[in-house]
Length: 195
Ligand code: SF4
Ligand code: SF4
Image 1 (cartoon, helix red, strand yellow):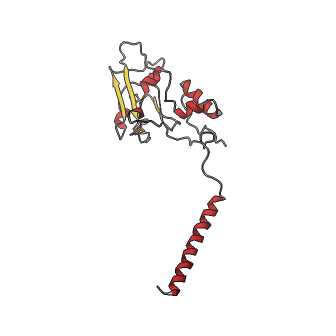
Image 2 (image 1 turned 60 degrees about the vertical axis):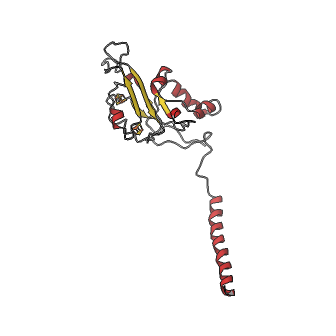
Image 3 (image 1 turned 30 degrees about the horizontal axis):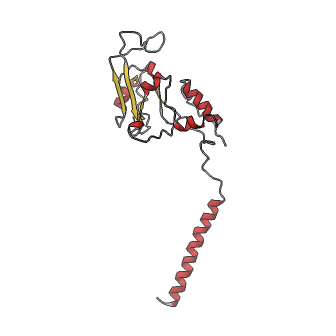
């Protein structure tokens, strides 16, 4: 290598380091785009697609949602057909003509959150909710048994982070109270930006 090339390489190296440092320094002084979750959080869009919310007392076990699912992650088991009572808009579980929905489960290790299952539902009893963070230690734990949740009066599972933070963070407690009360999430962008 010539002496000239040697010094040209040094200049080129210093120049590339300076360009890199300029970019780094610019980002150091920019406003952060992340938030300290869950103390703070960003608002959800009205059409956000989170963990499903399921109204078992309106489900007629027609299988249309399972057939629409592109990854076959909805599991339905029933003893017979079910009908909606026109007076109440619900399935009468005490009517002997109605079958029982013995299992309605979704495997979240496969779910794409595409919402295709909600489109064909004739009774509009399966919805995309606003909760997320459904972490699990095994694949089997990622299967949510909505029929079991219904026995506890829940339409969607309560994530661990919600249980742990409900006493400490105001918005988490409000969301926890809503879920425990079996209320569906709103469809507006109703969760305000905080922090
Ligand atoms: S959101 Fe999509 S992938 Fe998930 S259960 Fe519904 S249809 Fe299946
Ligand atoms: S499409 Fe609706 S009514 Fe039919 S099985 Fe699915 S959730 Fe139940």
